[in-house]
Length: 472
Image (spheres, helix red, strand yellow):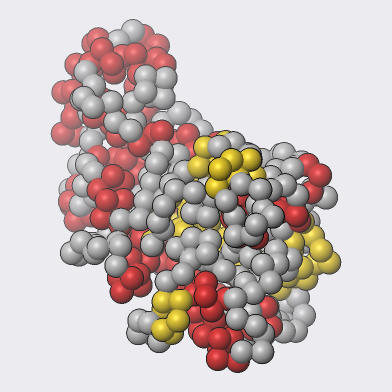
């Protein structure tokens, strides 16, 4: 998990910093919003409310969130895509675990990674590098899996999650959060998120380390917060002297800004006390004992822990953009744990021919396991009340894969699933079939769902417009 806003200045800011901070904003001083909290004295308990500091979020309006959920090596299309029509569809074996969320998902068929037919790289390399960027790979020194494939380095542009983070990431302590499990090495096969050309973002693969970086100092004691509210006490009560001292040290304009900030925090606190309908419930996850992120038998537990961390990061207002990367392109772990029982390695299995029914059955079981994890992530977000619905209702969780089908390395008919409606921007409960639609159009559609007016994304040669069928 790497993020420019997660880096601390290495010291506790003083009153002079506070004066400059109120005038210039925390980002211009290179301070995190956690440091800002210490500077003005409101403490960690107020961190879930800090997205309102710069006036960029309307009071009472739930934020929209974007989450990428990755699994590798393609799928079995005949058992992945639903039968039936747009609204009367029937899940087949792989997506059956999504049945409880039928009304909150969109399954897309006929979406091609058309851009990946342009530029250097082998099937897995271009599949991973183009997945979220829709752009060619840059030349480099990483050889591919075929003799005729020229060596490559990284993708040549920003990924969709980071483009969205550019718009909505400034109001949270972390601009975006990248988590994963069983991701090894640093190369084109292991990176899908890019701040810009040749600037990949590595996922944090240790959930305990992710937890420590995200929640350091965020001591969300729900019982204490409830006691304060019952007794009519504010989270601000304990720091009134500090605020008074700061007010004496700043000018008139800065005093007005500080007073406005105090009013916003108090109003949000009172609203939280009277009704949980306008703010997500912040619960810091209990991860238990540290799990070795390098051992294959720990993979299911690592996935569960990382999903807990991500759900809590959303609920606590620490970020509105994230990604969950399960292994990597050419991911080759065995799924020999309970609930799957597949001894052979995933990537090896993906290269068996269609006539090998045993390999096909194993791949169905592996992909169904990922569908179960996807459904569990949706359930985590759906259990957190927010606004008139849940965090899931204000989020879109995009399940992606670098390939359509493993044994042919095709990037046609990619297995895309959307969960949640991004605050009502998407028309869910449907299975939509296209005729060779470039996946760049899907990312333009996601930009529209977040109120971003870009007409193209990635390589403009592979844009035909937003998918109006998805949007409300």
